Length: 262
Image (cartoon, rainbow, N blue to C red; front, top):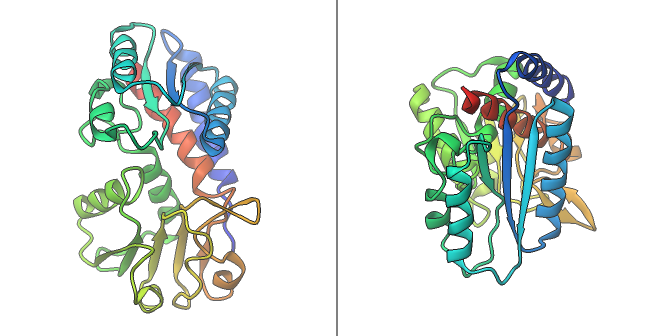
C-alpha cells in the first residue's frame, strides 16, 4: 500500500496555526542559500510558501556561488544576533569548497531548528516525520530489524542516534554502495532509505514498512530511493516521493520554529 503523508501534514500544520495565533510574537525563519542549485531553489520556495500558509515570517538570504566562507559565517553571526530571527537554516548542499561542519556549527544552538549541529534542543524535522509515519504504520518493537540506508547529516545519522536512544537493538546501517543491499532489504521489517539514488530499493520483505526519504532526479522528475510500484506489491506500506516524508519534514521544521520562539 502506498501511504501518502497528506493527512499527517494537515494535522501538524493545523496545530501550528492555532499556536501561532496565540503566540506573543510571530516566529521568523531565516534561510541561507548559497548558489543556485535547482533542487535547493525549489525546496526553499516551498518552505517560504509553507511559512506564509502557517502565519509565520521568513526571510531568504541568497549568496552567490562564489561567496567566501567568511562571508557566510558573517551572515550567520548577524542572524544569531538578531532578535527578529527565531530560527536559522542553511540550505544544503553547499558548494564543495566550503567546510559544512564549520558553517553549521556557527548557528546558535537555540536557533538551529534543523538540529544539524546535533546538540540543539530540537529533534531533527526529518526524524520527527519518519517517527510519525512509523507510529501511524504500527509502532515497531524494540527488537524489530530496522535497516537505514544512507548515513547523511540530514536524515540517516540523526535517525540512527534517535532510534538508539529509543532503545532499538537491531539497527543496521548501509549505503548505496553496499554490495549485499538486496539481501539486507529482504531481511528487514522496516527499511528507511535516504540516499538520493532513484530505484535503489527494489526488493523487500513481504509485509515490510518502507519509508522512502530519498530524493533525486530520474528522467527529469523527482524520484525517491524506492521503486514504489515494485515495492508496493510486497510491503505493508511504502511512502511515495513526492508526497511522503518531505512535506511532513517541512511541517515539523516549522513546529521546531514555534518551539524556538519559546
